[in-house]
Every structure is written in structure tokens, then in C-alpha cells.
Length: 292
Image (cartoon, rainbow, N blue to C red; front, side):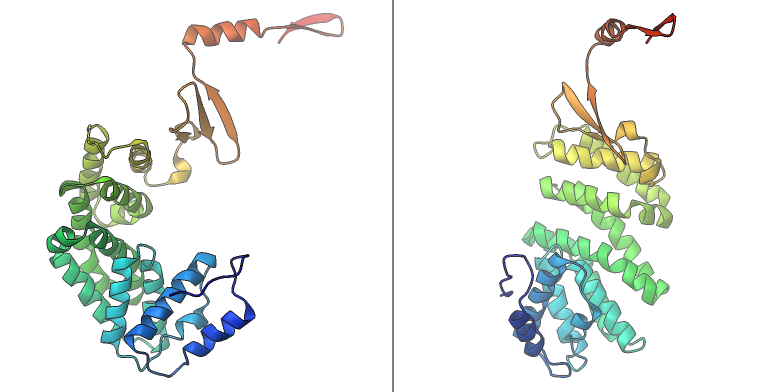
């Protein structure tokens, strides 16, 4: 289990010393020690970026197969672990001057989960969603290591997004699909624009459906995906008038600009004109009257 943090959310000197001495660089780790290390790294990640020195505790003389299997189990169980696994894989790749051993083992596990995705999904939708998150989380790292190898991610990424929305989806499936599209839409668009357009059609279909799992949160995520798609996956190009909090009461929504928040009062057009007319006042400037 991860160590308890102090009240301010940081580790005490004693805890840090214990954490460092628990994993000695160069010493082989068993499965329990690796699990404890990954749990500690997850806790550290919640406090901010993890220093590179922490990854050095993942020692070289631990076999790539053992380390890959522990990483695999962790990213299937923890939806937030994929970025940490990606950093570990890249760090060891750079540390060993291009040794692709760990990366190859992790890739084999990823692709095996993809080939058996329906079986994995039937056993646990949570594990399937986390495996999809791992695909998207590790793809940029493999692009840095070997672009040719990274191409093996392309088909699984698109097909897994299809599976999330096509294969009896629930609320978490739809939410995961929408978030992955909003975060990776630009990359997917560069890889295959046609397949992205197909996904957008499915998003539109879900938005218009009366599925019981479709709530305001998911519709808001999907609507943001639609806006990103319409404006070339460039969030800065989206007009401020479209950035609205749709959970606000219908009488008063909040227009979110990039610098300030402006309230918008929804009223019939005649009411708006009447309010503007009533607001006209006579103000004197010198010897003349001006209507403001």
C-alpha cells in the first residue's frame, strides 16, 4: 500500500528516506516490490511531475518480461497509470541507449489485449477502457522511439474507439470515448481523417439518442468534441460564444471566455429590446443633450 502523506499532501523527510532506501538501484525486485513501487509512483504523480530519478528505481536487472507484466497489470487496474508507464518505458529506452526490450514486451501485451478485446470487455469493461487509455497514452512514446513500430497502434486505436461506442456502451464507455477524442482528435485526424469523420457521425448519433446513460455531462463532452472537429481541432479557434456551461440553469447560463466570465440572461427577443429601450437615459454634456 502507498505510504500516507502528511497533512499538507507532501512526504516527510523520514518518509522520503524510507521510500528511497526501500528500492536500491541495481537490486533485483520481486513482483511485490514492483507493485509497491508503482503504487508509490502513482501517489507521487498526484503531487506533480515525477522526477526522472524516481524511474531509476526501476532497475535494469529486473527482466523486461517481469517489468512489462507488472506495468500491464497496473495500467489495466488504474486508469491514471498509463502516462507513468509511458514515462518509465521511454526512460529505460533512453537509459539503455535504445534497448527495445521493455518496449517490445509492453507492445506485445497491448496488441494481445487488442486482439482479445471482446473477451477482455466481456470480463471487465473497466479493464477494457483502461487498455484503450494505455494505447493512447503509449502511442506518443513509441512515436519517439520508432515511428514504424508506432504505426501498429493506429488500427487498434480507431477500432477500440468504435468498440466503446458500438458494443453495448454504458455511461463510462461514452465518457471515455468522448474524452479520448477531445484529447487526441488532432492526432487521429492527421492519421486518418475519414475514420475520424466516421467517429464524429457516431458521436452525433449518440447525442441525439435517448439512451438512459446519456446525461448532461456526456452530452457536454460530445458537444465539445463536435466543436473541436468543426474548428480543425484547434480549441483557440472556437468562438467564445460556444464555450458555455450547459449545466447552468436555463434562465442564466455562463459564457466562458478565455479571460473572463460574462453572464448571459436568456429572455424573449421582445423582452431584450424593451430592456434596452428602458435603459436609455438623457445625459448632459456641456450645453447639449446626448442619448446614451
